[in-house]
Image (cartoon, rainbow, N blue to C red):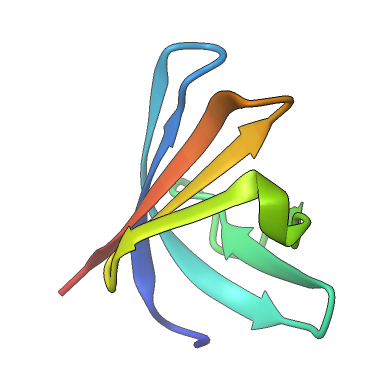
Length: 76
């Protein structure tokens, strides 16, 4: 949902991307606001179901070729 805040971790770059707010939602993608400039958006295309693991209602893990790439955790 627009306005939700997600903590993002990039496993490939071993980088904590911080808390990102959802700026836009489309049927095929979601756009997160940059933490330093909420007018800039970073798009995430929805991956195929085989590349997503949802271990609980607050966490989404995204894989590429079986390797963890991104983890998003919903913030309250």
